[in-house]
Length: 131
Image (cartoon, rainbow, N blue to C red; front, side, top):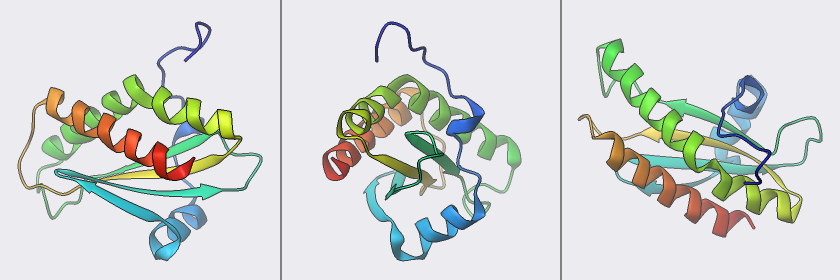
């Protein structure tokens, strides 16, 4: 990231369009697993969208208590916020845009450091595949 950019996650970078989410999960997106996470991504052509928009999903099937689901979502969001430049720099250089979903696969909580390493690894793999 350049010196003028900050490590933030503004609302416009969150994926909340039902149509795009349906397209992403109905076979339009590609998936990469790195336990305990899976990333589903899809390039998009819309000019009005930000370079990358993310969605974070922690199924109720994995954690019945909302406290644990929220903790995992917070960990993933923080890890993405710190390392999103891996994805954004590559997408900006190639002039592409993408939507990305992180899905939690495990029934157990993991340390923030481990989650951060997995998110970073998934972002690197995604960058290689998208660009």
